[in-house]
Image (cartoon, rainbow, N blue to C red; front, side):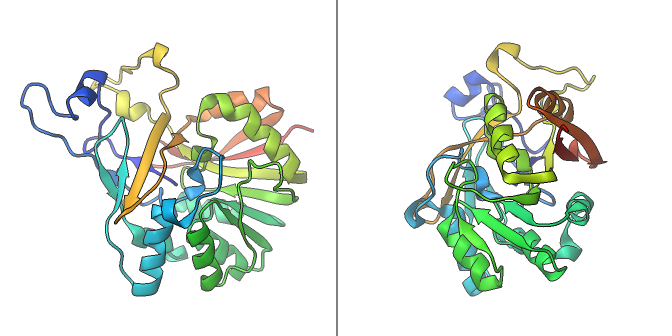
Length: 292
């Protein structure tokens, strides 16, 4: 994940509000944002728009995780967006164990079969659980510092790589994408590219196990009516940027996608989609399989 957003403490800004720093136009009071992490967070730094790999000097999440691993604590990992107020990500949640994982994550791990690719593996919490259960797991991340922490934590096969890079070539029975795993797709128009890459990485009979959230709750009024500008693009497309101490990362696109939209694009690109579980806050778990 990366992220699950909570209605009430966290809201989208209008275009006019962004121009004046996200303050309420009547009261002038700045409204602080709020992240909700139970399910978002093994982070999946996977996020970087499948472009270049990160370097240590532009890797705030990796720096925060490295500090926490070395010292048992970390400073604030700050999160920014042009759409939301500043917030922070609690680094300790990236080290959670099986007992601390929400039901959707447990169901996803239980559904894994064969050789597993953990995309955007973060601090390695999912890879370690699967490894302990006897799975052959490859953990992939664009962050060099996270890759180093995972190796030190005992993940046996860790790669500093971008799964969207054509040079990343291998074959897996399960591609695991958790913590709002759809985020790494970035934008709706990248769906065809995503499914093309997955076809190349999956063995016959393989599948993608992915979770995501429907951001409609951010836009619903009290009567349940959606207040969305249909000319502004898909409502689940968000941009983020992180900072840890003096380390600043690049801005990246992040995609939250509702299940019906995911299923549509899966079908358009030769995949089937099944909802395995529905969470308690517009989140869900899906399995995607190439059509035979």
